[in-house]
Amino acid sequence: QVQLVQSGAEVKKPGASVRVSCKASGYTFTHYFIHWVRQAPGQGLEWMGMVNPSSGSTTYTQKLQGRVTLTRDTSTTTVYMELIGLTFDDTGVYYCARGTYGAADENWGLGTLVTVSS
Amino acid sequence: QSVLTQPPSASATPGQSVTISCSGSSSNIGSETVSWYQQFPGTAPKLLMYNNNQRPSGVPDRFSGSKSGTSASLAITGLQSEDEASYYCASWDATLNVVFGGGTKVTVL
Image 1 (spheres, rainbow over the protein chains, first blue to last red):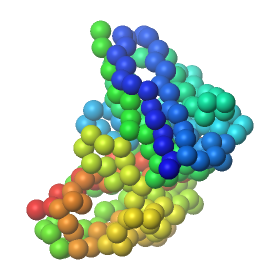
Image 2 (cartoon, chains in turn purple, red):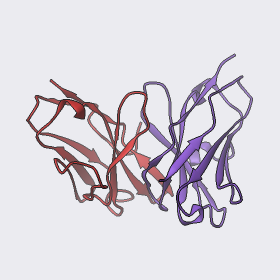
Image 3 (cartoon, chains in turn purple, blue):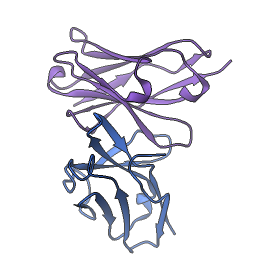
Image 4 (cartoon, rainbow over the protein chains, first blue to last red):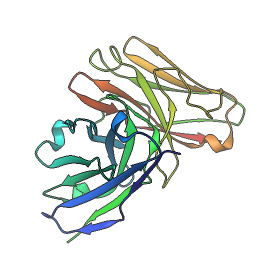
């Protein structure tokens, strides 16, 4: 079955960077996009960007341009999300999700809690 | 401020129906398909509807979706206690973003 397994919770100081991984299994890795969506405490869903595992091409939300980088390793079927210049507003749960070019499908990771604290 | 506009809350008694609206623009809903996600507290979102009105396998048929112009709706008929959750609409936008609604918390009275 399709699984997206994310790395564990992180606690970071303001100004630091965080890298979250998302290991995919149970399907052909290069046939689906991987989206990243985050959710601040008590808030709604915010799309961050997506990567095409086949080509490595990426699309990011303008809000995070220059701060977020998505990369993939086809040998380990893993996608990485790196966010730099962390602020308190970056605290939240980060999800990876499989999908097509424009939407996430029913396969989501369980989420990774990133806490930015001084 | 979310690009797609949803009411923050909706409620109904068990067995009744509830409809959640999602308002967008010509750059998103007006030209692209809409998805809906259901989320329970502390869990990942679950795809409830895609391509405006298609249910993934396992989603009960009391959930239905529709789209007209720059708006979409999710209807839940025969509301059950386990439907108490937050619901989010989403669409692709011409600005090359996936955009979400702010979410609607459904309460079963």
